[in-house]
Length: 434
Image (cartoon, rainbow, N blue to C red; front, top):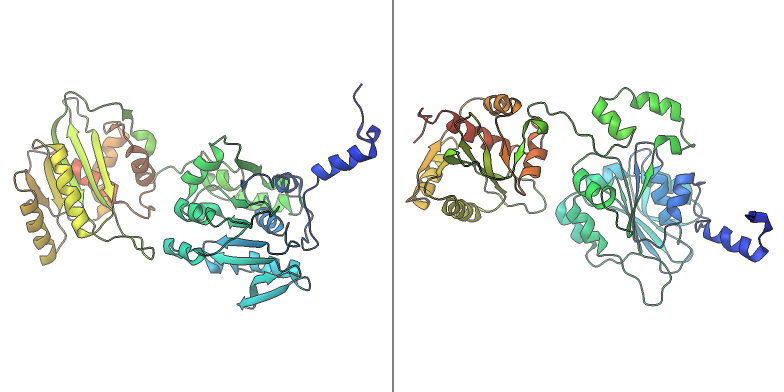
């Protein structure tokens, strides 16, 4: 016969209560929801990702988790948003921390009237920070924390996340666990890497706690759900349902138009590569364009397969060396088309590439008109299923970019593919070449 909890000896009851009760401190001014309660019990796990849908109580969970060891001398916690303005909003984490901690801890380093650092009677500290640019991660180079929280993780790059992960340290003999806690909705720039790390990964060391609006009894759930119901179906699926698999239907291209084939067709002819060049290196403060080189051919059946895509950023010297190396790999039968920028600087650049690619068939092309309009012929053929992609590591990044056009931060691969198609589709016509 199964024993009831009350039939157990007192010491066993106390032990079970201890195991099922998260560590709490007087600084926590919030009664956890059932989902938050479950996530707060996972202090033996280094990485926990909480959330999914909007309204699941993500911010309260992060602040509660950060304060679980604020009574331990030497404990240090950090909570990050991508920008400081996000932290300092009316209902942001700085305001919430001030509401919880006034009179219980000392707030210092005030910005905009709200402390960005709290010092507790134990000597423990809680900091709030931001990491807007890639290089800002080095602001934490010499720091050591036992807790790091990321609010809206999908707004961060994987590079920032992994670097901050290295800042988890503790003194030998300390019983305080080392923890990364993150919360976010689907979408944004980090959607794919967050999904791969936490949603699609079944590692026992990375736990995903799915929380939805229905889990948060502290909110007026009915009113908030009505607000979310007015969103575009794509946004609603992400924010109301916490759906990590839904993708926006492209305004210019759709990923389902591009079937993936295992290898280069045997009957492909007239291969060419079209280069859309850029020559600025990322330095942590910028987000420059990429160099993209789309290789395309044509088959007797009227298909225009994209055979390969080169996609990288670098200095002018790096770009030249990669273009030359790619031409050598493509072989003499592949024509190299270089997009020519307007003005005299564009002419000089073309002259440089003409010398660089001596021995190869190289043509310049000066495009005219709106770039989105120039993509229309390619989009038309893609919709008809006539632009297959030869399988390779470049395919998924290409599809992610092209389905976001015209809202993509960068559309270099779309530009290069449209230029390649313009020449592959009408090889007999001379298209403003020099």
